[in-house]
Length: 344
Image (tube, rainbow, N blue to C red; front, side, top):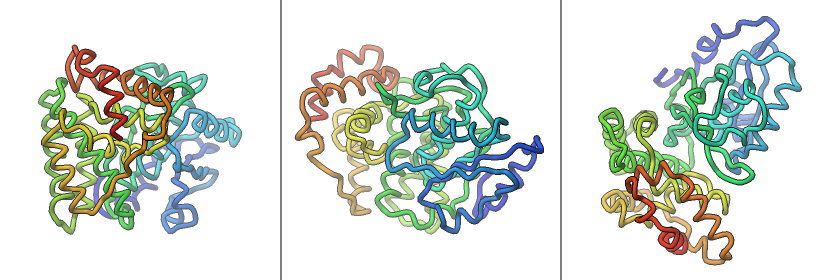
Protein backbone atom coordinates (compact mmCIF):
# COMPACT_ATOMS: atom_id res chain seq x y z
CA UNK A 1 0.00 0.00 0.00
CA UNK A 2 1.26 3.47 -0.81
CA UNK A 3 -0.03 6.92 0.01
CA UNK A 4 -0.20 9.64 2.59
CA UNK A 5 -2.38 8.51 5.47
CA UNK A 6 -2.16 4.82 4.52
CA UNK A 7 -0.85 4.02 8.02
CA UNK A 8 -4.42 4.59 9.20
CA UNK A 9 -5.44 1.46 7.30
CA UNK A 10 -2.97 -0.82 9.09
CA UNK A 11 -5.68 -2.24 11.35
CA UNK A 12 -7.78 -3.19 8.33
CA UNK A 13 -4.74 -4.69 6.58
CA UNK A 14 -4.02 -7.16 9.37
CA UNK A 15 -7.63 -7.85 10.40
CA UNK A 16 -8.01 -10.81 8.05
CA UNK A 17 -4.92 -12.43 9.58
CA UNK A 18 -6.36 -12.43 13.10
CA UNK A 19 -7.44 -16.05 12.81
CA UNK A 20 -7.09 -17.44 16.33
CA UNK A 21 -9.36 -16.08 19.10
CA UNK A 22 -6.62 -16.47 21.74
CA UNK A 23 -3.78 -15.26 19.56
CA UNK A 24 -2.30 -11.83 19.02
CA UNK A 25 -0.09 -9.62 16.86
CA UNK A 26 3.36 -8.43 17.89
CA UNK A 27 4.15 -4.80 17.08
CA UNK A 28 7.93 -4.39 16.83
CA UNK A 29 8.38 -0.64 17.30
CA UNK A 30 11.57 1.42 17.27
CA UNK A 31 11.77 2.68 20.86
CA UNK A 32 12.43 6.21 19.61
CA UNK A 33 8.61 6.32 19.22
CA UNK A 34 7.90 5.12 22.77
CA UNK A 35 5.32 7.43 24.31
CA UNK A 36 5.11 9.44 21.10
CA UNK A 37 1.99 10.05 18.95
CA UNK A 38 2.86 7.22 16.53
CA UNK A 39 2.73 4.66 19.34
CA UNK A 40 -0.74 5.86 20.27
CA UNK A 41 -1.90 5.31 16.67
CA UNK A 42 -1.03 1.60 16.64
CA UNK A 43 -4.12 -0.59 16.07
CA UNK A 44 -3.55 -2.72 19.18
CA UNK A 45 -6.34 -5.13 20.11
CA UNK A 46 -6.93 -7.67 22.84
CA UNK A 47 -3.76 -9.57 23.71
CA UNK A 48 -1.54 -7.80 21.15
CA UNK A 49 2.05 -7.37 22.34
CA UNK A 50 3.89 -4.07 21.94
CA UNK A 51 7.60 -4.88 21.69
CA UNK A 52 9.80 -1.75 21.71
CA UNK A 53 13.26 -2.41 20.25
CA UNK A 54 16.45 -0.43 20.52
CA UNK A 55 18.49 0.17 17.38
CA UNK A 56 21.23 2.38 18.79
CA UNK A 57 23.44 -0.54 17.72
CA UNK A 58 22.79 -2.57 14.61
CA UNK A 59 20.79 -5.78 15.29
CA UNK A 60 22.75 -8.66 16.79
CA UNK A 61 21.82 -12.34 16.62
CA UNK A 62 21.75 -12.55 20.42
CA UNK A 63 19.25 -9.68 20.54
CA UNK A 64 16.99 -11.47 18.05
CA UNK A 65 17.14 -14.68 20.06
CA UNK A 66 16.19 -12.78 23.23
CA UNK A 67 13.22 -11.11 21.54
CA UNK A 68 11.97 -14.48 20.28
CA UNK A 69 12.21 -15.86 23.82
CA UNK A 70 10.24 -12.86 25.12
CA UNK A 71 7.44 -13.63 22.68
CA UNK A 72 7.44 -17.34 23.57
CA UNK A 73 7.38 -16.46 27.28
CA UNK A 74 4.45 -14.13 26.64
CA UNK A 75 2.35 -16.90 25.11
CA UNK A 76 2.77 -20.58 24.16
CA UNK A 77 0.70 -19.77 21.07
CA UNK A 78 2.52 -18.26 18.12
CA UNK A 79 1.36 -14.79 17.10
CA UNK A 80 -0.81 -14.39 14.03
CA UNK A 81 1.66 -11.86 12.72
CA UNK A 82 4.53 -9.43 13.30
CA UNK A 83 4.42 -5.75 12.36
CA UNK A 84 7.78 -3.94 12.06
CA UNK A 85 7.56 -0.15 12.44
CA UNK A 86 10.74 1.89 12.10
CA UNK A 87 13.85 2.17 9.97
CA UNK A 88 15.91 -0.52 8.28
CA UNK A 89 17.23 -2.07 11.49
CA UNK A 90 13.76 -2.31 13.02
CA UNK A 91 12.40 -3.92 9.88
CA UNK A 92 15.33 -6.37 9.85
CA UNK A 93 14.52 -7.26 13.48
CA UNK A 94 10.88 -7.88 12.55
CA UNK A 95 11.94 -10.08 9.63
CA UNK A 96 14.39 -12.09 11.73
CA UNK A 97 11.91 -12.58 14.59
CA UNK A 98 9.20 -13.75 12.20
CA UNK A 99 11.62 -16.32 10.78
CA UNK A 100 12.95 -17.57 14.09
CA UNK A 101 9.49 -18.18 15.53
CA UNK A 102 9.18 -20.99 12.95
CA UNK A 103 12.79 -22.21 12.77
CA UNK A 104 14.83 -23.94 15.50
CA UNK A 105 18.11 -22.82 17.00
CA UNK A 106 19.78 -19.41 17.01
CA UNK A 107 19.44 -16.74 14.34
CA UNK A 108 23.24 -17.00 13.98
CA UNK A 109 22.71 -20.45 12.47
CA UNK A 110 20.99 -18.89 9.46
CA UNK A 111 23.43 -16.12 8.54
CA UNK A 112 24.07 -16.86 4.90
CA UNK A 113 22.14 -17.69 1.78
CA UNK A 114 18.99 -19.87 1.71
CA UNK A 115 19.58 -21.65 5.02
CA UNK A 116 16.04 -21.07 6.33
CA UNK A 117 13.91 -24.22 6.02
CA UNK A 118 10.47 -23.17 7.28
CA UNK A 119 8.34 -20.21 6.14
CA UNK A 120 8.10 -17.26 8.50
CA UNK A 121 5.18 -16.03 10.54
CA UNK A 122 3.12 -13.47 8.58
CA UNK A 123 4.90 -10.13 8.83
CA UNK A 124 4.24 -6.54 7.75
CA UNK A 125 6.60 -3.60 7.16
CA UNK A 126 5.79 0.01 8.04
CA UNK A 127 8.95 2.05 7.28
CA UNK A 128 9.46 5.37 9.06
CA UNK A 129 12.73 6.02 7.19
CA UNK A 130 13.39 5.58 3.49
CA UNK A 131 16.47 4.34 1.68
CA UNK A 132 17.61 0.98 3.01
CA UNK A 133 15.19 -1.04 0.89
CA UNK A 134 14.72 -3.32 3.92
CA UNK A 135 10.99 -3.22 3.30
CA UNK A 136 11.41 -5.18 0.05
CA UNK A 137 14.67 -7.10 0.51
CA UNK A 138 15.07 -10.83 1.16
CA UNK A 139 17.74 -10.05 3.76
CA UNK A 140 17.66 -9.43 7.50
CA UNK A 141 21.11 -7.99 8.21
CA UNK A 142 22.51 -9.19 11.55
CA UNK A 143 25.80 -9.04 13.42
CA UNK A 144 26.65 -12.45 14.85
CA UNK A 145 29.36 -13.79 17.13
CA UNK A 146 31.82 -14.27 14.26
CA UNK A 147 30.47 -12.26 11.32
CA UNK A 148 28.08 -9.62 10.06
CA UNK A 149 25.89 -11.28 7.46
CA UNK A 150 22.22 -11.29 6.61
CA UNK A 151 19.64 -14.05 6.76
CA UNK A 152 19.09 -14.22 3.01
CA UNK A 153 15.98 -16.17 2.08
CA UNK A 154 12.80 -15.92 0.05
CA UNK A 155 10.99 -16.47 3.37
CA UNK A 156 12.54 -13.24 4.74
CA UNK A 157 10.40 -11.05 2.48
CA UNK A 158 7.55 -9.14 4.09
CA UNK A 159 4.06 -10.31 3.18
CA UNK A 160 2.70 -6.77 3.20
CA UNK A 161 4.22 -3.28 3.07
CA UNK A 162 2.52 -0.02 4.09
CA UNK A 163 4.34 2.98 2.61
CA UNK A 164 3.11 6.22 4.16
CA UNK A 165 5.34 9.23 3.31
CA UNK A 166 3.82 11.18 6.22
CA UNK A 167 5.83 8.95 8.58
CA UNK A 168 9.09 10.48 7.30
CA UNK A 169 8.25 13.91 8.70
CA UNK A 170 10.69 15.18 11.31
CA UNK A 171 13.62 12.87 10.51
CA UNK A 172 16.92 14.66 11.32
CA UNK A 173 18.77 15.81 8.17
CA UNK A 174 21.87 13.68 8.75
CA UNK A 175 19.86 10.52 9.30
CA UNK A 176 17.60 11.30 6.33
CA UNK A 177 20.68 11.79 4.14
CA UNK A 178 22.64 8.71 5.26
CA UNK A 179 19.62 6.44 4.89
CA UNK A 180 18.75 7.95 1.51
CA UNK A 181 22.32 7.48 0.29
CA UNK A 182 22.04 3.78 1.03
CA UNK A 183 19.40 3.77 -1.72
CA UNK A 184 21.50 5.89 -4.08
CA UNK A 185 24.47 3.55 -3.59
CA UNK A 186 22.23 0.50 -4.14
CA UNK A 187 21.38 1.95 -7.55
CA UNK A 188 24.96 2.77 -8.54
CA UNK A 189 26.25 -0.65 -7.49
CA UNK A 190 23.40 -2.51 -9.16
CA UNK A 191 23.53 -0.60 -12.45
CA UNK A 192 27.32 -0.88 -12.77
CA UNK A 193 27.51 -4.49 -11.61
CA UNK A 194 28.24 -7.58 -13.69
CA UNK A 195 24.95 -9.18 -12.52
CA UNK A 196 22.84 -6.46 -14.18
CA UNK A 197 19.74 -7.56 -16.11
CA UNK A 198 16.73 -5.79 -17.56
CA UNK A 199 14.63 -6.28 -14.42
CA UNK A 200 17.28 -4.73 -12.17
CA UNK A 201 18.08 -2.05 -14.71
CA UNK A 202 14.47 -0.87 -15.01
CA UNK A 203 14.02 -0.47 -11.26
CA UNK A 204 17.54 0.86 -10.68
CA UNK A 205 17.30 3.58 -13.31
CA UNK A 206 13.98 4.84 -11.95
CA UNK A 207 15.24 4.78 -8.39
CA UNK A 208 18.38 6.68 -9.40
CA UNK A 209 16.28 9.32 -11.17
CA UNK A 210 14.14 9.75 -8.04
CA UNK A 211 17.24 10.03 -5.83
CA UNK A 212 18.58 12.82 -8.03
CA UNK A 213 15.27 14.67 -7.74
CA UNK A 214 15.33 14.29 -3.96
CA UNK A 215 18.97 15.12 -3.26
CA UNK A 216 19.93 17.51 -6.07
CA UNK A 217 16.65 19.37 -6.61
CA UNK A 218 13.95 20.79 -4.36
CA UNK A 219 10.59 19.04 -4.44
CA UNK A 220 7.73 19.50 -1.97
CA UNK A 221 6.90 15.81 -2.41
CA UNK A 222 10.45 14.64 -1.76
CA UNK A 223 9.38 12.19 0.97
CA UNK A 224 7.00 10.46 -1.46
CA UNK A 225 9.77 10.28 -4.06
CA UNK A 226 12.36 8.94 -1.60
CA UNK A 227 9.98 6.28 -0.33
CA UNK A 228 9.46 5.01 -3.87
CA UNK A 229 13.18 5.31 -4.66
CA UNK A 230 13.89 3.07 -1.67
CA UNK A 231 11.35 0.48 -2.83
CA UNK A 232 12.62 0.51 -6.42
CA UNK A 233 16.25 0.39 -5.29
CA UNK A 234 15.49 -2.63 -3.15
CA UNK A 235 13.78 -4.30 -6.10
CA UNK A 236 16.80 -3.57 -8.29
CA UNK A 237 19.30 -5.32 -6.00
CA UNK A 238 16.85 -8.18 -5.34
CA UNK A 239 17.59 -9.47 -8.84
CA UNK A 240 21.24 -8.41 -8.99
CA UNK A 241 23.49 -7.47 -6.06
CA UNK A 242 25.26 -4.61 -4.33
CA UNK A 243 29.02 -4.13 -4.59
CA UNK A 244 32.28 -2.82 -3.12
CA UNK A 245 30.80 -0.08 -0.96
CA UNK A 246 28.43 -2.38 0.89
CA UNK A 247 31.14 -4.99 1.38
CA UNK A 248 33.46 -2.38 2.92
CA UNK A 249 30.66 -0.97 5.08
CA UNK A 250 30.15 -4.41 6.64
CA UNK A 251 33.76 -4.33 7.86
CA UNK A 252 33.29 -0.85 9.35
CA UNK A 253 30.10 -1.95 11.07
CA UNK A 254 31.44 -5.24 12.43
CA UNK A 255 34.63 -3.81 13.91
CA UNK A 256 33.61 -0.24 14.80
CA UNK A 257 29.84 -0.58 15.24
CA UNK A 258 29.17 2.10 12.62
CA UNK A 259 25.57 2.17 11.40
CA UNK A 260 24.94 0.93 7.89
CA UNK A 261 23.87 4.18 6.22
CA UNK A 262 26.74 6.32 7.40
CA UNK A 263 29.12 3.39 6.91
CA UNK A 264 28.13 3.22 3.25
CA UNK A 265 28.70 6.96 2.87
CA UNK A 266 32.15 6.75 4.48
CA UNK A 267 33.21 3.85 2.25
CA UNK A 268 31.69 5.26 -0.96
CA UNK A 269 33.67 8.49 -0.64
CA UNK A 270 36.89 6.48 -1.21
CA UNK A 271 35.74 4.49 -4.23
CA UNK A 272 36.57 6.96 -7.02
CA UNK A 273 38.44 4.27 -8.95
CA UNK A 274 35.46 1.92 -9.04
CA UNK A 275 32.47 4.29 -9.21
CA UNK A 276 33.95 7.62 -10.46
CA UNK A 277 30.72 9.23 -11.71
CA UNK A 278 28.69 8.04 -8.74
CA UNK A 279 31.21 9.31 -6.18
CA UNK A 280 31.40 12.72 -7.89
CA UNK A 281 27.60 13.05 -7.83
CA UNK A 282 27.46 11.81 -4.24
CA UNK A 283 29.85 14.58 -3.21
CA UNK A 284 27.62 17.17 -4.87
CA UNK A 285 24.70 15.80 -2.87
CA UNK A 286 26.76 16.09 0.33
CA UNK A 287 27.63 19.69 -0.49
CA UNK A 288 24.02 20.62 -1.17
CA UNK A 289 22.86 19.26 2.18
CA UNK A 290 25.97 20.37 4.13
CA UNK A 291 26.92 16.88 5.20
CA UNK A 292 30.36 16.32 6.74
CA UNK A 293 31.58 12.75 7.09
CA UNK A 294 33.75 11.60 10.01
CA UNK A 295 37.42 11.06 9.19
CA UNK A 296 40.33 9.19 10.72
CA UNK A 297 38.18 6.31 11.92
CA UNK A 298 40.83 3.63 11.40
CA UNK A 299 43.88 5.70 12.36
CA UNK A 300 44.30 4.12 15.80
CA UNK A 301 43.26 0.56 14.97
CA UNK A 302 45.78 -2.23 15.52
CA UNK A 303 46.67 -4.73 12.81
CA UNK A 304 44.34 -7.38 14.23
CA UNK A 305 41.25 -5.16 13.93
CA UNK A 306 42.25 -3.95 10.48
CA UNK A 307 42.71 -7.54 9.34
CA UNK A 308 39.28 -8.41 10.75
CA UNK A 309 37.77 -5.57 8.70
CA UNK A 310 39.45 -6.89 5.56
CA UNK A 311 38.34 -10.46 6.23
CA UNK A 312 34.75 -9.36 6.89
CA UNK A 313 34.60 -7.39 3.65
CA UNK A 314 36.28 -9.97 1.42
CA UNK A 315 34.07 -12.79 2.73
CA UNK A 316 31.13 -11.20 0.89
CA UNK A 317 31.95 -12.99 -2.34
CA UNK A 318 28.72 -12.27 -4.31
CA UNK A 319 29.15 -8.52 -3.74
CA UNK A 320 32.71 -8.49 -5.09
CA UNK A 321 31.83 -10.73 -8.00
CA UNK A 322 29.01 -8.38 -8.99
CA UNK A 323 31.35 -5.41 -8.67
CA UNK A 324 34.52 -6.72 -10.32
CA UNK A 325 33.60 -9.95 -12.11
CA UNK A 326 34.53 -13.61 -11.55
CA UNK A 327 38.25 -12.81 -11.24
CA UNK A 328 37.59 -10.20 -8.54
CA UNK A 329 40.21 -11.66 -6.18
CA UNK A 330 42.95 -10.58 -8.58
CA UNK A 331 41.56 -7.03 -8.57
CA UNK A 332 40.58 -6.59 -4.92
CA UNK A 333 43.49 -8.13 -3.04
CA UNK A 334 43.70 -8.05 0.77
CA UNK A 335 46.42 -5.42 0.38
CA UNK A 336 44.21 -3.16 -1.73
CA UNK A 337 41.30 -3.60 0.65
CA UNK A 338 43.52 -2.77 3.63
CA UNK A 339 44.78 0.36 1.87
CA UNK A 340 41.19 1.53 1.40
CA UNK A 341 40.39 1.04 5.07
CA UNK A 342 43.52 2.87 6.15
CA UNK A 343 42.39 5.93 4.18
CA UNK A 344 39.14 6.00 6.16
